Length: 119
Image (cartoon, rainbow, N blue to C red; front, side):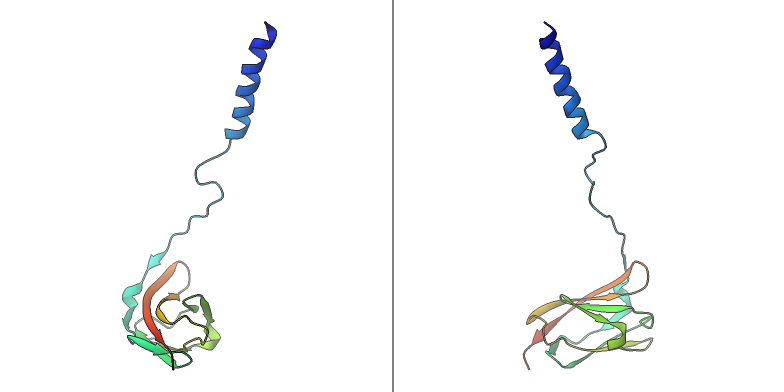
């Protein structure tokens, strides 16, 4: 009779150990992003690999980096003014439509895309 009570209590205790402290979001990091894509006023429809690309807009002077597809371009590799950012299209960029993300301080990000073509 003692065994009949002991097993259900032990199983319940083990289940509690596995569920205590767990949540649906455990292991995930939540990041808030401010979409400031309205800062971009013009980007060419297409750009060649290895060619210069200029993005125009406003409030662009404090940019930290540009993510071009899967390539991060550091601030040192950019020519920056308040109204434009000039960069060299990475030769390793994939051909076709490529996502471009402008990274500003804090959580500000601007999103656009360009079609990358072969030279």
